[in-house]
Length: 122
Image 1 (cartoon, one colour):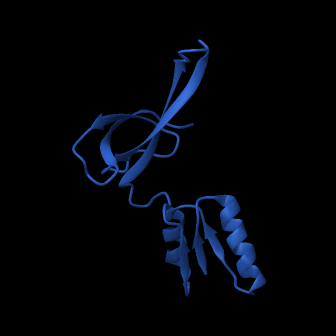
Image 2 (tube, rainbow, N blue to C red; image 1 turned 30 degrees about the horizontal axis):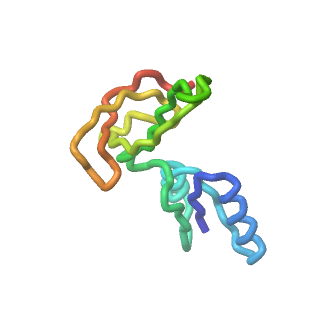
Image 3 (cartoon, one colour; image 1 turned 30 degrees about the vertical axis):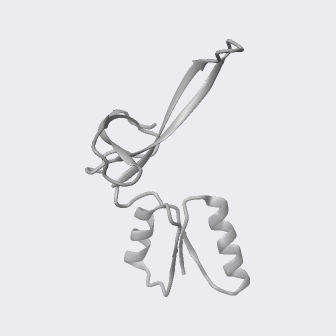
């Protein structure tokens, strides 16, 4: 059995539950790793997370962090927003700093697209 889950604790919990039922399972953390495992192994069944990262590269969740001054307490507080951005060339990866551009709506939640990579993740 192949389990594709991007959250390690959840993947291990699924693997432990399957082990109790005497079922061997391989874990893949993203879509690319799952495709690589499928190339070399034959699985009877695959269990997929609904929101696994990769391999399509079609959509990225982008978090925008900013610091603002609290209007009442006058202290600096951290705020963040999460946007869904379209990346048709699959150039962005986890941790990259990207430049977005507002576009027409491409799905229910996607109104942005990745224009360029400002800084690659280290």
